[in-house]
Image (cartoon, rainbow, N blue to C red; front, side, top):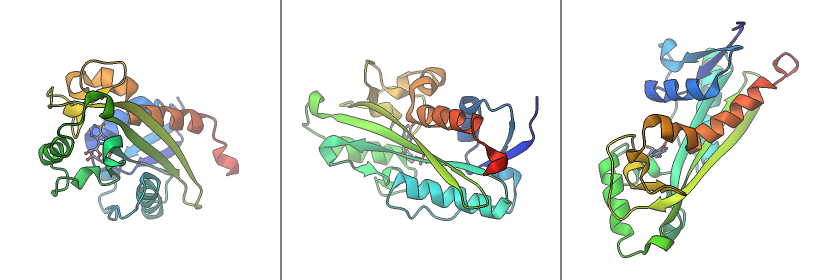
Length: 204
Ligand code: IMP
């Protein structure tokens, strides 16, 4: 196995790092965790789109470490809320990362909306950046519905209220293995893996 190229995953979340490494399956790359570089901290995500936020993370990571870098940004888009919470999914309920509040607010805003109008999607943008300024984005989308109540204990974020299309259970009722086969993140990083396998790194 030739692991000659270093790639830094621009996330401070070890679970996300492990999940993405499994999806990527890149034998030619030595994929490092951001926390392997103790002095690196990522700037605030101030972008108005997933692409902007993912770029902010990947570009600053590649500038600080001087290695190629990979980041992601994702969110939940609900049709009856005109695409909200979208890029602001994490702080929708008022406290950043408080999933319980986020879900409570979402279900309250959607009170009375019938099932067929509860359509939603998770979107993920995976971003690759090189120290020379080159960037490349891949997107993954999974369509579904927002349930009337939360169900299930697995996963994180909005998993207890997201029922993927073709399923009867929420993401939080699926095993991590099942979710990671179909999730927006898996789709985006599988496409990114394909891109990196064919990428002419030496001539870029
Ligand atoms: P991030 O950009 O991956 O950190 O995601 C931003 C926010 O979107 C998270 O804090 C969650 O609220 C929501 N989110 C993204 N992906 C998922 C998922 O797979 N399940 C549930 N919520 C998610």
